[in-house]
Amino acid sequence: MAPVRNITVTGVAIVTVISMSLLSYYTSKHKRRKTHKQIYSNKSKNGLIGAIGNTPLIRIKSLSEATGCEIFAKAEFLNPGGSVKDRVAVKIIEEALNTGELVKGGVVTEGSAGSTAISLATVAPAYGCKCHVVIPDDVAVEKSQILEALGATVERVRPVSITHKDHYVNVARRRAVEAKELARKQKVSNKIDAEGLEVVNGHASEEGKCISIFPADCKGGFFADQFENLANFRAHYEGTGPEIWEQTGGSVDAFVAAAGTGGTVAGITRYLKEKNPKTKCFLIDPPGSGLFNKVTRGVMYNREEAEGRRLKNPFDTITEGIGINRLTKNFVLAELDGAFRGTDMEAVEMSRFLLKNDGLFVGSSSAMNCVGAVRVAQSLGPGHTIVTILCDSGMRHLSKFYDSQYLSQQKLTPSATNLEFLGVG
Image 1: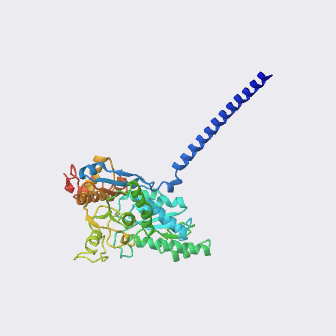
Image 2 (image 1 turned 120 degrees about the horizontal axis):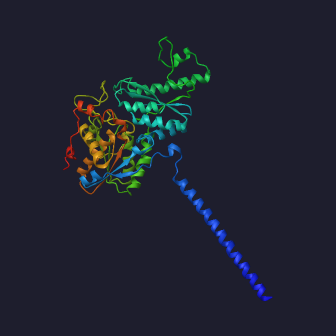
Image 3 (image 1 turned 180 degrees about the vertical axis):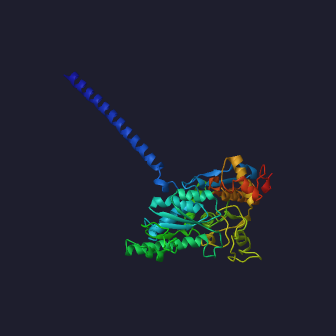
C-alpha cells in the first residue's frame, strides 16, 4: 500500500506545482496588463489643457557652434494653441473662474496683437466660455483669420497710444463691462428688448436701434487684461521657469528674451534668480520700444518724447507682440542685469538663418530672442549656457515677416549668408 500512498502524494505535489504555475502566470499577466494601463495613464493628457506646458528645451546647434556657448530655447510653439501664450490663457481663465469673476457661459475679452488672443480663443471653449478679441487693424491678417476660425468674435481698431480711449486694450476693457451689464439685465428679465440693449451697448443699427455684440445667453464678461493681470507672471514663475531649471539641471548661466506684457520675462527671471542669484538675465528690445532705455538708463523716454504722450502708433518695427512704451505690473517684477537693442534687419536675417541651418521656422519675436541669445553669448564669452524662448512659429507671420514684397517695401530684404549681420564670422 505504501507505493500507492507515495504515488498519491507525488500526484498531489505535481497538481500543486501546476496550479501554482498557472496562478503565477495569470497573476503575472494581470500585473503586466495593469502596469501597461498605468503607463498609458501617466503619459496621457487631460484634454487640451493638459497638453499645455512642459515644452521641449532644444539646443540650437547653429548658434551654439557659432558662439562657443550652449544656446537652448523653449519650443513654446509646440503648445496646442501654437505659442507661449497658451500658458497665460489657462492661468488667467482658471484664476478668474476660481474667484467667480468669470463663470461658465461668460465672455473673455482681450486686447491683443495676436498670440494671447489666439490662445484665449483656443482654451476658452474647454472651460465653457466664449472669447471676444479687439486687435489693431495693422496686425498680420492670418492672425485675425485664425481667431475667427476658432470661434472668437474679432473687433479691429486703428492703432493708437494706450492713453487714447480707443486703444485696443481700452476697447476690450469696455466690452467686458458691457457684457457684465448685459448679463445683469438678463437676470432681471429673460427677454431684453431693443431699448434694453440700447442701455447696454452703444452700437446703433441703421434703424437707430441698438444691437449687442454678445450672444443673448451671455453670462457676463471678464477682461483678461494680460498686461496688468499678474496671472501672466505667475504662469511663468510657476511653470516655464521651473521647467527651464529642471531641463538644464540647474545649469543656466543666462536667460534672455524680449518683452511685450512682461509676464514671460518677469516670471522666468524672478524664478531663476531665486534659484541662483548668479544667473544673468537680459532683455532684448525691438525698435521703438522704451524698455531698453528703462533698463539701461532708468527712463522710458528720450529728449524728443515723453513717456505715454504719443497719439500715433509708437512702434517702428515689424516684429509683433513685443516692445512697449510703458511699465506694466508684470514687467516691473522682472529681475534684469542688462538689455540689448535689436533691429528689424537682425530679426529678419536671424529667422532665415535658423530656417536654413536648423529647420526652425519661427516668428518675429522668436527671431529677436535668438538675436538676443547671440548678443548675450558675445557679451559673456564662450562656455556659457544661455536659454531663450521660441514664442511661436512663422505660420502666423506669412503676410508680413515672411513676405518678400512687404520686406522689400520696408527695405528689409535679407541677404546674409551666415551670422555676419551680428558680427559673427
